Image 1 (cartoon, rainbow, N blue to C red):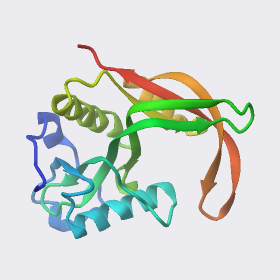
Image 2: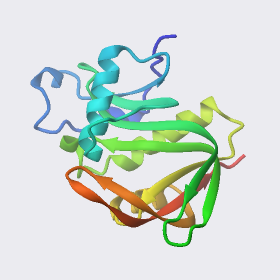
Image 3: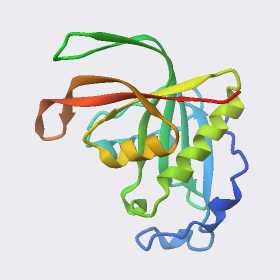
Length: 197
C-alpha cells in the first residue's frame, strides 16, 4: 500500500514560508497533506523524518508511531512540518496517581500532535489539525468521536483543542517524563470531540 496524497485545501497554498527553511523549497511554498498506515505504508526515510519531528517536539529519544499517521509536508522536499497520529484504543486503562481511580478509554485517540519549531508562532496548528480531522472523518464516517490526553500545563495545546470543539470529560494526575528531568506528577485532561452526523 502506497502513500495517498489527498487534494490540499485551497488555504494551504497561501501559507508563507518561514525564513529558516531550505532555499530549495522557495520555488513552491505550499504544504501537502499526507496520510499513511504507520504499520505498512511508511517508507524508511519518511519514518525517520517523522520520528525526528516527534523526538524534537516532545524531547524524547525513543519516539513511536502507531495507527494512522497524518502529516503536512513541504510539497517540494516532502520535509514534514506537522504530524498527528490517530489510533484505535480498546479499554485503555488510565489510573490517577492521587485518587487511584481508573478510567477506561475506548475509541480513536489523537497522539503525537506536533509542529516543527521553525513553523511555530504562525497560527498554523488550528487549520492544519482541522484539515486532518476533516480527512479522518471522510475516511471513517461511522466514527462518532475522537479522544485525546493533554497536560493541563500545556496551555497553548489546551486552547488549541478547545477551539476545535474538544471538551474535557475527566481529569487525571499522572507521571510526566521530560528529557533530562526526573518524572513528576502532573494533572492532565481527557478530552473528546463529538462529530456531527
